Length: 319
Image (cartoon, rainbow, N blue to C red):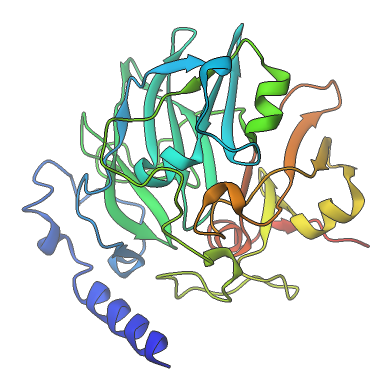
């Protein structure tokens, strides 16, 4: 009951400040007159202010063979472009949420929203320029709102779209990537690279959201819960506007539907369960490919977030 009262108080306080007039001192360059957000009440403070969660740029990497800190089941975001394979551990992204990097000459933003479990990689090129992204400290449907440092437009991480400012309604191009365990990455890419530990005073390897993915309701979320009795914090694999629940994938192992092949294999720990990320409960490794075996852009997100951003989405449930 105390938690519910505290949550209601936080929601009321955040809603009371859901107005650009409260944000202009911190965001003097943002064009709040241009937006596709229906109501400012949709955007809440997650606690930290602008850059309170520090995004990273141009991180250092080390060879797979030199990495000794990661536990085998720890999740990493894998990005393979050309001859380059890189792993971005969630033990770092949990604390930084965005990494601005360049791979094979392509500027990319590697992003992770812990409250939605959404791990996406975007091409940072828009029009003729390259954007650098930071964390606003704001949430919409419990999902991270990013901003670009060039125009200070706001972007919705889960959908890769501008929602406030100069780039409203512009879409970032998602680059195929996937979440897998450190063991899985280093077995497939023994000559690959892994992001080195950032030089910030953070408890890397520890999970500040202990037990979060076992709760019944997401943090700072007041929207509708998923249909079909799908638990709000159930992981789903999203491809475009379709979602497959993780329990179905774990039961079937492989699903061939809607032009994609989705495979599940054990070995990956949840980053949002135990206090030590590498000891989290089993969630499995997911890979999504097309009929020709090519990797397909997708997301592994919580069911509530899929329903919030794709309210008319298609649920690929067992027959």
